[in-house]
Image (cartoon, rainbow, N blue to C red; front, side, top):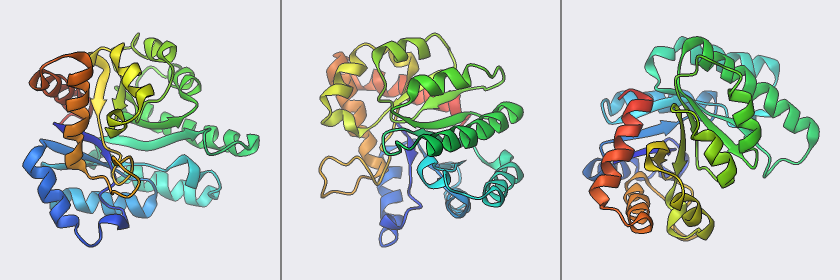
Length: 253
């Protein structure tokens, strides 16, 4: 199994990061650790080098925190990304968040920044890992304008089934489902109608734990796979094999 989206670099793990990684190694084939800002991207890269062959880095610029960045800060983050383009497995998480952000001018800024990252992914032919909460349809319309994106991943997909069906028209587009499957009825209903050929699994650690008091961690992606197997009435090994192979294909690992 592979956790295709987590944040082991976050300070939530400062006291026991080694143990968290050890538990992940006991259960998983690999972990995709996603950066969210310039400083975090470098930390993600360092962690991947310390755990070569198990932790794989992506460089991102989270939409909620990046929407008010200066042109200089954006340039610096993108230069750092391009300078390390051969050491990362995807660009992300990048995107737009219309759940938290309602201001039209900030939404426009998010779209502008997101588009600039799409262009880099398209130019360098690197997979795109997207945070597009409450704007999945808009993001799909955006990326459809680019022909050289090798893969696109809708991280923690929460869109409509109608949008999911449009995503599935593209062999290289994937939707990632998290440990939210364990308690979200909406996501449970959604996964029923989405073939595993378009599915990845994730935790979004340290978020989306089973309870508000808990801290999530990559090893828990097993629970997401188990829930998919239960909902689809499939053998767990089959779910594991298909979703793992999808992840290996997307991130070339």
